[in-house]
Every structure is written in structure tokens, then in C-alpha cells.
Length: 170
Image (cartoon, rainbow, N blue to C red; front, side, top):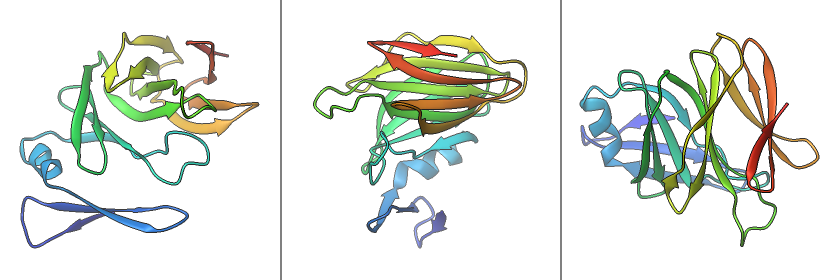
């Protein structure tokens, strides 16, 4: 939920988790909007099943086709990637059950029907790979199918899982 405050350059988000309400203030957020950076997708999804809150914010932008990752709660810019198609949904997800050995991946559903994905290690996006699912916009959902997975739905659907350090889809 976006709520205006007394300052014209400050936005407040309230993130509702199972345990508490956590207000976070992002002064840089409205600076992006003020620069004409219209947001096409926003993800505050939890990094893994069972997590209480998100540690990253993933934003996609209309005019530039960029995806930017910010760490929370201070809205620190971590990484940027430019896509050939408009980002419509995004998830930054840890496919590991072991918190001491995270296997984070950035997964983006595009308006052109593709799923772009890459490893995300120490705030850096790796080489993006792409899987076509038709020509309809792709929506992503986190799920658990015998382990962590992401459901991608467009013209066709696919389940993305991690096997060792490589993404698998079916």
C-alpha cells in the first residue's frame, strides 16, 4: 500500500506479514517516479517459503525495460538488468532449504511471453537466460512442489525448479 506523507518526496510502504506490521520509508522511491520511471512490475515476495518478510524489492520499468533490485529496509540499489521485453512480474527467490548456503535466483516474466532468469549472488545479477512460453504476458507465483518452485503462466505454463546450480523447467 502506498501512502502519501507530509513530504512530497517520501513514500511509506506498509508490509503486512504474519507476525507484525513493518513500516518502511523510501525517499528514493518517489525520486524514480518523479524521473518518469513508470513501474511495470513490483515484487516484495518472500525469499523462501515460510519467510516472514522480504529482504529485497524488485522493480520493473515501462520505458527502459529495466529490472532493478533494492535491498530492504533501506532501499539500497543492488543491481540492474535491461531486458529486450517489458518486465511484467518478478521474483527474487532462494531455492535452498539451507539458509547458510543460499541459492538465489531472479526470475522475470515478460509482457512478450518469456521467462528470464539468472543467479543472484551477493547483490549481483548473473547472465540472464530466457525461456519462451508463448506471446501472452507471464505471471509468476512461488509454490512448493516437492521443494521450492516457481509457477510461470502465460500462453503456456511451466514449473521452474533448481537442480544443483542450474534452473530446470517443465
